[in-house]
Length: 98
Image 1: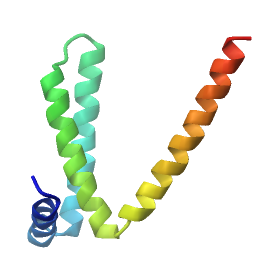
Image 2: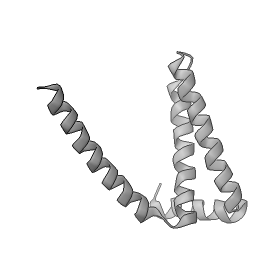
Image 3: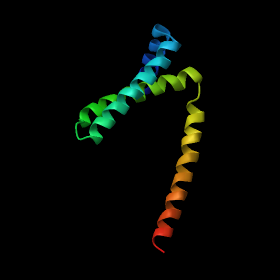
Image 4: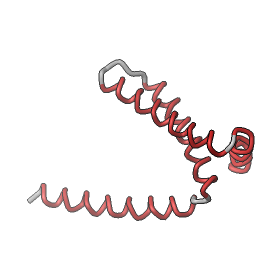
């Protein structure tokens, strides 16, 4: 799906259901993903269900970024955190090899 079409769907959902409803929805979707991951850890899970719930979480998170107009701030935080994570992993690997 094209980004413009995705953006319109998210905008329409926020306008139709309302900001509060979409904030509640992201919480519900994250909870459902958590439940599916826990089931998988108990060997009762289904990877297809995990994929479905993860898609729901990503869709609702995109709406949250729109609501707060924080897409660029989130990307900047991800970049910072990934660089820090890579540095920490390199240090751990180096220490492990000594």
